[in-house]
Image 1: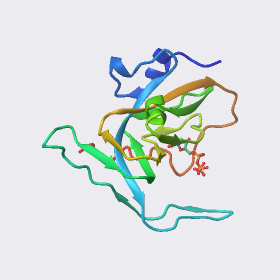
Image 2: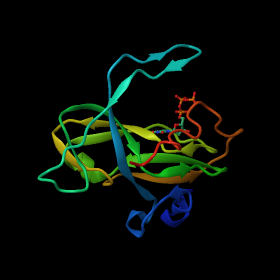
Image 3: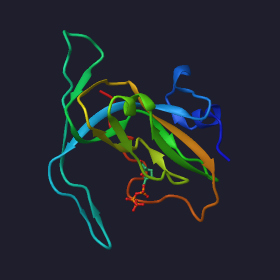
Amino acid sequence: MYRDGAFVGEHVTPTTHAQIQPNGVDLTLDAIFEPLEPGRITRNDTEIGKRQRVASAELERKVPETYYLEPGGYVVRYDEVIEIPEGHVGFVYPRSSLMRNGCMLDTAVWDAGYEGRGEGLLEVHHDIELERGARIAQLVFAEADHEGTYEGSYQRENLQTPRD
Ligand SMILES: O=c1ccn([C@H]2C[C@H](O)[C@@H](COP(=O)(O)OP(=O)(O)OP(=O)(O)O)O2)c(=O)[nH]1
């Protein structure tokens, strides 16, 4: 069974009222990165290639910061700290407004026990303007059996990264 948005909200920090949806919690955009060098996945190891943070531009000195993205693949970091509680698995979906604007968010499985500020792959098929802090995705929780909890290399990722 999928849990309701209020339950998901207890495991996502910080959240505002506007982020709590009937079936999940909206996640907001923090930073955007462009891969610069090849990564590497072998049978025993994973290496994330170097990447460069995409600079935001100010539109006529408007705040908050705004990103202008041309077609390509970008790694986005969400602003919220997410904890996946035991007995659950998390899934992130794009906000439909992204799709309707010709963009897509590709995501993977969020394991029970994971805690961190996670990332996703933003596919831009048509130029788009995104404000930093805009809601771009939605996290949902399903109840799930599991053996053990997440202890991989992304555990507690980006928690020390300051929100500048
Ligand atoms: O779209 C996603 C999906 C998952 N995660 C987080 C939560 C998840 O628990 C963790 C690890 O994901 P996964 O197990 O798929 O990564 P891996 O490449 O297999 O790494 P590891 O070997 O550490 O399991 O990354 C994200 O940040 N974004």
